Length: 349
Image 1 (cartoon, rainbow, N blue to C red):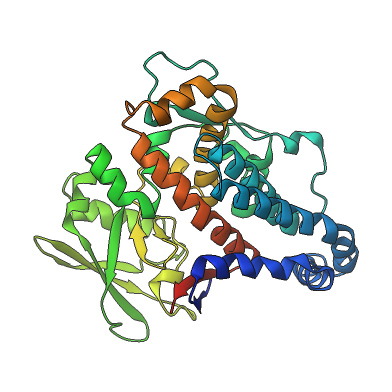
Image 2: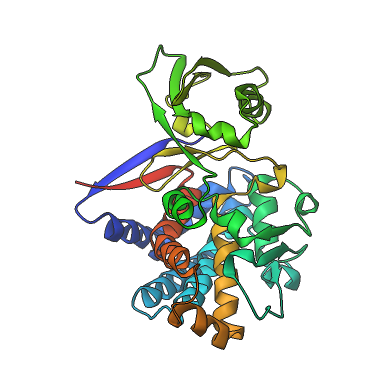
């Protein structure tokens, strides 16, 4: 479980990037890394921090420069710049989990592959991404989830499926593809210190054969609690009402680590009704996978990419543009969340 930390500013986007300046000083970065390393290796924390401080700083600075360049670039090259920026920032996160990174050449690969030959009637949303055994993304998955890469190695994900899992895109996704996969959650006032109530549109049952018991079963099945913290207390025409039994020091459902719950960068909660365990992916992985595909289009299928963004014939152009702009704003925020182990929300005054 992670606490939510709200930072208020007249310019939230600028404030987000200003926060990274903390990692551009050797003393503060060394202290930060030592504190993290000593949690798992008390005797060698200082040694690892001393060895990795410069490397960590350069990962952060390089990532920032790629993102800044991307924000000023044309869409023709923007995804490629963002992707390399994501790689650099992700390496910084990995370095906090693995002080010996990179320990072998295999982890320097992308960890993904996509179709080499594109069909003549290529549609971005129909393309696929495959998880490989070795590479940056594979290492990130094992370090963050503490699960073996065998769990997802070889899995193929359609672009459309991955887009459906991003909360900020749910309205655009629904408008473009005429279906809804992710649903906003509406909270009421806490019923008691140990009970919280939330509502969700009853239209979500279209994904569960119109059976609310299936949704309830999924919520409890994937819960981290041994007991069943979720109960359905009301089923109306428009909304379903659930009660969540909190435990420990959790203050809101937003901080509850449940694979079906997610937050947008403004702190609003959504439910992702997965049907397969293979889609229990950290959001940074989803963003990385999608941008990898766009980056490879930019670099290796330049003519096809040009036709997508300039011909006005691609139905996917709308969601591509939304995703690229979203990633510029959110991915660095997700990196800060991972580094500080918090949900950091930058809000306007």
